[in-house]
Length: 498
Image (cartoon, rainbow, N blue to C red; front, top):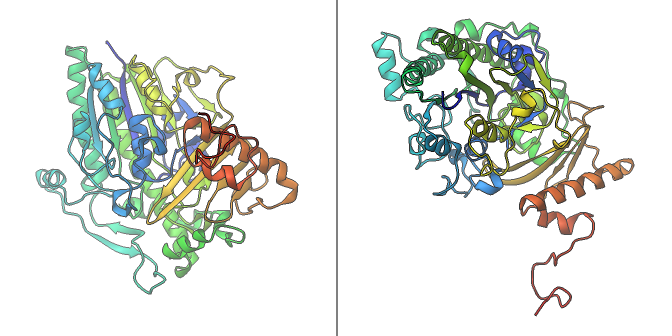
């Protein structure tokens, strides 16, 4: 084998606390739990930004969103570019240069003009943010197997502030499991895996195969056995359902109204969480089919496996749904599991790592220099059980808008989280005493040393990265001495050099 095979399993809008291996006692996720038992579970795995397209572009390029500049989903675009510029480095093209087969089955969502095929991936082009149930390949799949078409009932939605119907949050899918889009995706992935196994065996040609589910992104549309799998009575409400938005940026309360939380009874919230957990279980079942196929094909010992998602989901936390301009753990901390053959089993790492780090890890596994993935760092030393004293003790995340422009930057360290909101109040949370992030401590005088230290640290990190958000911080906060003319006018006689 000239290179190591890679299976990359990815979901969309997936909370870490839906999995048994992350502590959910009611979860029915045996296959992902087994992957964690035989691999490495990362407990502080973050998305660079909690929105689909920018996060997925970061995975593809190994670059933070501010750098690759694909900053919003095209469906709610607020004026940003919609495709990666020509010539931008991607791991997909680097793998192709190395002789890899490359496949992507499922959600792409990294642009409108350029599909996954344009970057060298095999597989059907499945554009958009949700299951494209009218796609010709899916319809052909149903017809070949005499399976019934997509049909839903038992819709769950609230009422918008203008009196109109809210976004669809969940519904019962009137199809058998075999007809679901998730089963279709797993079937197509297994078929591709079988083709790649022949090339690996007969031509010594390694593969990278990504299986990207569109779920458990809302609306949660799943068949009976998963829609009713979890008893809502067994579902604990998130403590942050007590959110008052006192001392928080007003946009959060507006988002709560947009997502119609207060127009639905609390029992509906329990049912939504139960259905969401059921959706995760359905996906786990389909992942199990793919892992079983990999074992049947004799690929397990030669294939590294990743499992993660693009970002999390509120599902009632902070009286919100979906994601948006609120940098809470619910949507920024996500599941992340990596299993590399020959590495120790059952590791749990507590370092701050990112979806971005997958890019360098994929390149490292393939024997490719990861340097072009400039904001990424290989996870292989951590997966190997090595402690790295130079690994950063904090992480920076960013957001640029959804529905409307809304720039934010976040610094998360061991105990505290700082969020800078230029249009509004900043946020500071003590995650040791307030893990649910209900109390914004930013203005408390006794936390001035923490606030000042974190503002300075975030400022220095943004400057080092080249993220021009730091210019706002220069004039608005005490960030320490600066060695340049912060006005950038070039007219200050002290900074002018003839």
